Image (cartoon, rainbow, N blue to C red; front, top):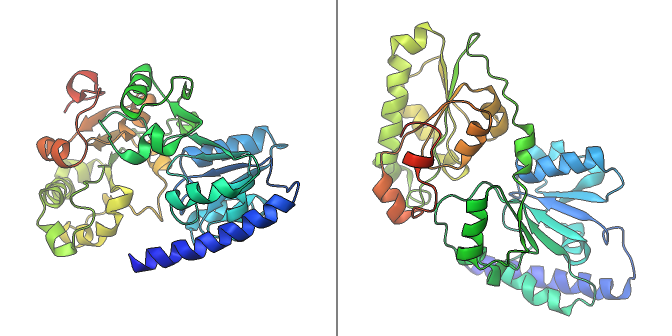
Length: 341
């Protein structure tokens, strides 16, 4: 808490310095810029897909991408298009750019509240804020940061009419702000699986809010850990999977990746089982290459169904999930889903 406070103090000084300079400078090369981002250490989702599309088809647009310098994905961004998180250029971009576009929360230096206070001191026109979204909202995701009164996005992208109505109703967005566009990463979802050559089964569960911050010892006692260990061990020892050269890839959610070493110790070593880390594997590549998806409540099932490929919902903790994570939204897995529960 103390560390976060001092970080915001330092960020505030940097903001004021940038605003003072900006208020005396008529124009900078960032004034017309489209600044895109995702998580501050990733370039592999809707933001990156849009970035690639614009760079290829609209080279005259001044487009930049915000990412941490230490990220393995930073090499994907051309040097002349990159803005490193926390850099002086980053501070200028969130004050002076034309558009701030993201699939996650906007990556301001410091906190969202600090930015809202600081931006009031700028006499320049504020950037338009566009939220691409990370996935299709299907559950009752009620969080104050998503409310229009807090976020004040100028545009939010949705993928279906039921999602649009949900956003307008639950988060108080004006209908003119909610645009039925789909997700930009869907343009890259081209099925490359070949089950005749080798069948790949992708197991990709979402995280559990009540588990993401517990210690390793407590995690190994969780129902979540024990269920997936049992599932993977069954697949590792099953003669059918081994004899038919069926590859099983387990890719935990971003927030659960830190527990991969625990799964490695608990799962039977087998050539057909891969525990995939986010640093070594790209989600879109895995989705394209896999023949079958096993997931739970993750919106990634929309991506897989978009390619018209079969999937299974493994939902052993429905009550706990709806009680402690997300409540049920407009989507019913039994009636609206793309495979058996």
